[in-house]
Image (cartoon, rainbow, N blue to C red; front, side):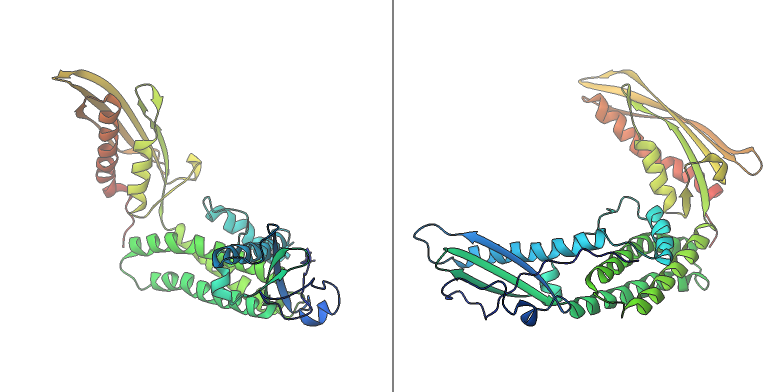
Amino acid sequence: MIHRFFVTIILFISSLSILGQGRLSWTENKRAIYPHEIYLTGFAQKQLQKNETSLNDGDWENLKTKAIGNLLMKISVNAENTTITTTESTIVNNIEQLRKGLSEKTIVSSKLDNLMGIKDDVHIDTDENIAYAFVFIPRQELINKYASNISLNLLQAEMPLQQWESSKQKVEIIKKCREIIPPVLAQVLHDQRLIIAVSTNSVNADENKLQTQRAISILEKYNELLKQTISVYVTCEEDILGSPSTIISNRVKKELTDVGCDFVSINQEADFSLTITAISRKAGNYGNRQIFYVDIIVKLIDNKTGKEVFADEFSEKDGSSNPEQAIRRIYERVGAEIKEKLIPHVKIKN
């Protein structure tokens, strides 16, 4: 069952204007003017100084921005507290594994006012010396926009998958899928939650379900595609003057990802096990520069056969008045060199 935190609606019973007089009524006929079932609303107010009777354009814009923020916050709270259906929870669990650091919280874009046609009105209560800003938008207008966004995003995610079978550039297609599909599906989930949060009835349930099933299909095809990549488990021992470092391992992973490799956190799940050891040592001085060497040992094991398919030992040097800088430069170069040495063994075939 979908739970909603209903939006508190603050409504005007008459047309608002900057030159309005007296105190606004907040109760009479409010549901007739901006019914909860039809509109989403936001509100902000500011106490004026004793002799202040108006606001400049900048202050009015700031007050309207706060009112828009009030509306967006209500949508976000609704979306975060929406209990999704069992079908949707399947895609949630899978997408969470792909989002790679994308925020779990559903935050509405601050550009919503420009994109969605939010309308605003302002008023000064001369009796209480308070400035008010009020914003509103039809729910269905918002729902239609997000439904359109979902359709476009699903189409964007499907395109590289459709290219896979006929393409001779398999590595490029995998890279494109990795770049596009996880964030796009996360955005689809985001927009689905917002539609559920904004809707006051179930008229969109069928369309939402079809879009979810389409997203799950995309996700399944994406996971099947990833199975055709080469999976690698990486162990790397490296440090900079005694402090732990990940420069080499990060660079190697980035470089090998570009040729179609995937990286796993459990060795038993990997096609290959890659071990890298980097040992830095000072070789002497040349003027005011300190000369450092880094000795590298690389081993690549085929986990299916248990055989060592590649092994190498080499050294790199660099000099600087800053020892840490010299070692960092070596590590950056080493990551690229290791990639070139490993490509013949781990690159997927087009």
